[in-house]
View 1 (cartoon, one colour):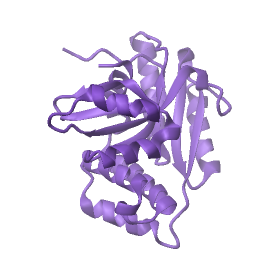
View 2: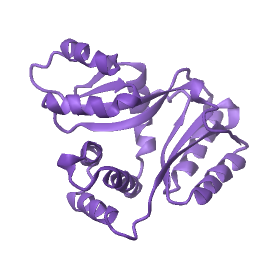
View 3: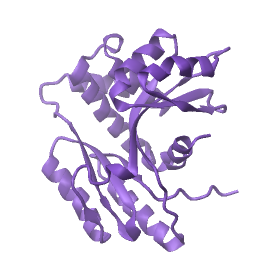
View 4: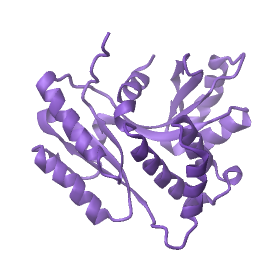
Length: 245
């Protein structure tokens, strides 16, 4: 399995730790997708991708339908995607992805955590050299699929030749240029793949290993950031802990 897959797998439980918060975050993503492309999944690829992710995270159908309905309401808040970045203790780089209807509140919350842990909140783009920004698609593997042939077709859409297979889940995960998100999603659907969950992510290109106490401090900082409802994901370049045997 590739570097990107191992990093995302190791950090998945941290990003989606509590079910209630997971559903809140996915609900905001539904709102963004509905406002951008309408409430009908068959006419809105972005909404289809979010719904596939919702199903994978066991979000009830009623919750999904309610989130779509709420997104159509006149009083529904308009969410903006805002990323904050900076350094935490021990020189660890941190990206914080948010969906917010009040940037003043959100930046205040994020800054308070950085300050509490003696970190430094930087300017947008200041840490871009430390992370690779990618779009990620996970979909059900079809019987008889030849991944070499599929990747050859996808290369023209700026998809990387490295892919990951989760045999337990029966899924394939591919990585590509974020600018090609819509084209990749359309291609996969036209090829008949089902449950295509798409997202954007940051993958650190160089991981820093920390000892127990330092690691615990970063973990605590990430946990505090993830307590805010506006925060969607937190990415760091700290090397994930080795799984317990």
